[in-house]
Image (cartoon, rainbow, N blue to C red; front, top):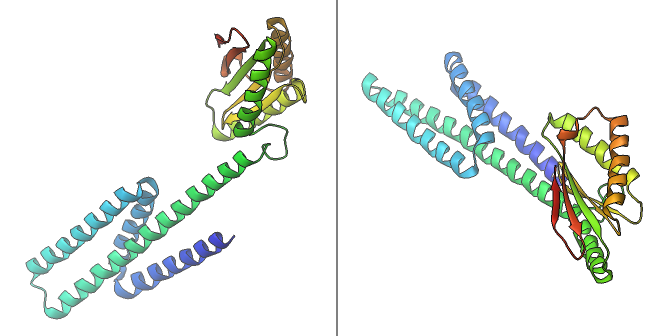
Length: 252
């Protein structure tokens, strides 16, 4: 919340500086030129890395300085006109420098928020209010279960599901439906269901033979067909056998 308020005040200050300087130091014909440059730099700073953005800022500074120097030399500017050119140059650079600083501060805060969110998810057991395990928690629990299965000579299956890339909103909706169906289909409090990445999840079937796995998967596919219009090849599976003879058995 504090970061959000801080960014809002910076944002307001940035555009106040832009508004005051553009309309105070530049004539109407030059204002359009400067506004166009400002918009281009907003886009470029959003795309470029911090280092590339800084190089662009320095290059722009030198280019503008040389441009004013060249025009002043050709047109033989008087002292007052030279002073005006220097002020215009400083105003241009000041605004682009402030835009650079604000853009990359905002980027840094956003990246930090993403990292903190991922860290919080790692430290919690479940994703949101669902019963789906976080990747960290799934790894911890599945490791213990796999060792116990190997000691007892039991077989099981670990199945990773992933969805082929779609439109962002469509993919998110499809993924949420698939994971909810998995939680409802596979044995609650016995099998594990965990999120692996933004578009993949994993299921651990304990003490299950191949026939049992096929029954569970068929039940899952039936529920998918009832809820989603998704082709079988769009849902990618990677099946691993867990037990004494652990090996990859299928990739579909």
